[in-house]
Image 1 (cartoon, rainbow over the protein chains, first blue to last red):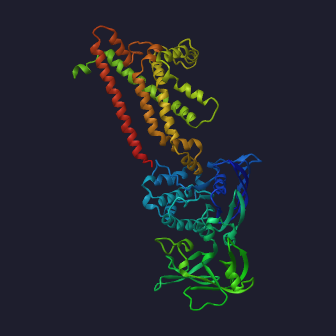
Image 2 (cartoon, helix red, strand yellow):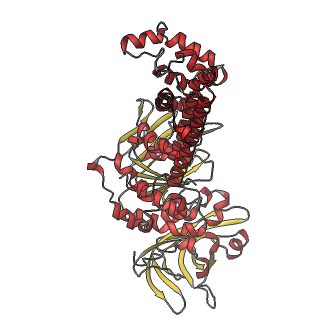
Image 3 (cartoon, each protein chain N blue to C red):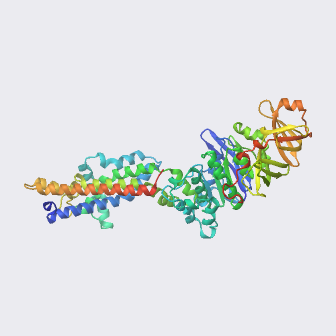
Length: 370
Length: 234
């Protein structure tokens, strides 16, 4: 799937001028509120008409103001999950799920009711009314409803923003499964680093209606300068790892990555399962010699490949650990004292307890082997 | 109790006719009522205020004036009346159909108001969600909007029915007071009050009209509650 967007749209006192292409499994539109990401996703869905521009999915033109093409939303076959689930209050959960099927030509119905219900764990809710569901359940049903219309592209507009942390943790694994077990490309709007780092294969960073950067998640996440100020503290390297084994005695999980072994608090995942972790730059210490007599359990050897000014009296240091980049944020003073320089051999030190469910993902609550 | 149900054939006819007229007036008002309510709730066009005023006119004009205007327009020689009689064979003047038209027109503002309010209460974002699932605007209306406004629609329909049951001025002006053809309950009661010794008949019909109106009201309550329970709107 290739999504190509090149649009120019004016709103009251604000303009969205965005041009990007993405072919990722899950493309995140990332930026602070007011950066135009929701406008952009509404344009792709066909909920609003752009002043100027062109949007195409896999070469199928959805909007082209020059050619006067505008495919109305009900013919786009693009699923949408809204921040507020927007379930139909007068239908049961099953009725909501079945709704899109009616309007999908039989030959294009690839989504199976049972499979989707299983995927989202909503089998026990089918007879209920939306008013009787919790926020997290509503959102899972909304995802199922969009999937069962057999869309060519799934848009998710901050689907977790209205939920509390516990509910978020409940839904994230389902979105991961959606990304990994179905073939539908997803465009995911979010202002949360934790969600983007965990879910996205590609990121488009938006700032004041314009594309500030676009590319693979690992590359974009290293650009701490792209992050909105309130999320800078959450910024850091994203690392793809695998579960090696669990250390039951100490309640830890050992992960393997290109950078080396990493110990994190115990995850509810089976050995061999892929885990994407985020190492906050503020949680990384730098040592010029391999430290001894230290409580921190993770010590990764690497080479400094970049030194960039950070916010205030800090610097951001990129360390190449055997091909995987780890970012560290330290004070100007530490950099000066340690005489850190490009190409220098250093050790990145990360405490195991600095990892939490927001940076490791909690894993599916029930099916640990999923 | 017996004297209450011991109606003369003419009185029975008045009861039956009233129910028929009110039912037809109500049913015939529903489609244009929904259309106008939609237009007024969501339309953005020049002259909307004017249209709104026009719809509400029967509510503020003296019923006699409305009846007279109907007579001028839908009477034998009125422009609309002549056209309908010639092309469709529909005649209003001095027929029960004319009574239904007069009652429908008089109850129309009440119905439009009730439906309009419930349309304005519908969350349009839910309709947009249906659109993204592949439903075209017509389907969205039929499967989302219509079920969501059903309580308002029922309320409006019952209001229109009740108004039709009690309509007097416009009906008598437009189609007169002909027993078995246009003599509805209020007209019959009026006739009784005009003749000596008609008190018993007037009282009987008055009580019957109270019973019918109450029954309609209770039916609408029960229906609306059942629909409301089925919907469980947050």
